[in-house]
Image 1 (tube, one colour):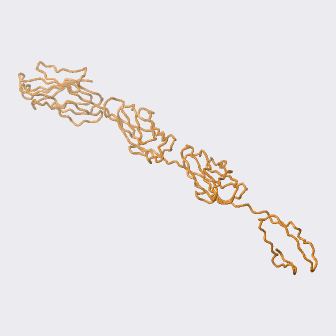
Image 2 (image 1 turned 90 degrees about the vertical axis):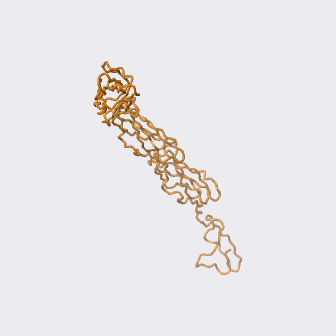
Image 3 (image 1 turned 180 degrees about the horizontal axis):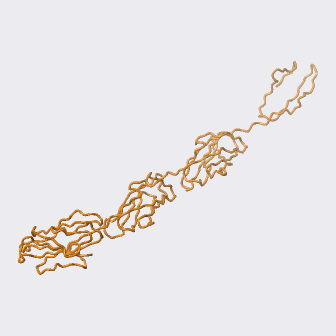
Length: 392
């Protein structure tokens, strides 16, 4: 701290009725008053002023209450650099050096005179310019974040005030965290992480960032607000669409599906799963089924294989897991399962039947294999049996 003496002389008074009033104005202020004023309550105002280094001040008029308006002010000690006090008690100028000037200074000045002195401490607080966060601009959206993946870094820059700055960042909303660390005297790097914000996370998170100047003067800081958008990050199975009917399968014949493709979310996908597989009519589970990623697809596509033991429609539910392990997508398909075709129908009996005699009873068996049992026999179209013979 530094002190100065300000002297004020009455414009019309003799030495016998002059009193000396001094105070510490960022130093000590003194004013000469007629003796009649000494009996009154006296005070120099304002007693404390707060101004900002580097900013031209609005002129400040000092006055003496309980005194006389016929005064002449002067300083017996150097004021803070950049400030001047006029003979009429007006403080003006552009302060240069931050600090607290006045009360408690070790350099208190006294006005050199033999006249009576009235002293009062006054203080000038010169605060530094507050820093201004310039980039990104206040209100900016910093981008889109993924669950369980670090977001950033985002470079934050400020100017003004007293560097190096210290930084603070806070995030509103559950499941999110943010850190900020200086990278230079005037810049910092912000990194955010969104772990598990719940089933219905907010679309945007609010981030508050503050830069503090390197000083102990109040209000030497700047705060801006940003937003970070949160991606929902759930993959989706896009092909075939959920609900599709896939190609037919045959009982007892190994079945391989078409390629099932996913997109979005965290890639590469961690896994593909068969959630459920059962016959629609009976509920019989399909036990011989598995799904594997298609080689070379980066887990973006998969195929399942199965071996069905009964005919009917089968319902298959497929799931893909994102790389973060917390997001997934399901898709349900129907597979018609048909019975295998019957084996070819083959005559077991020789095509040439045994011969018969006229007017003699005749009987022979015809035997076939293959096809489906429950055969029906008939003559070939355009042919007839010999008279007297029937086919049953």
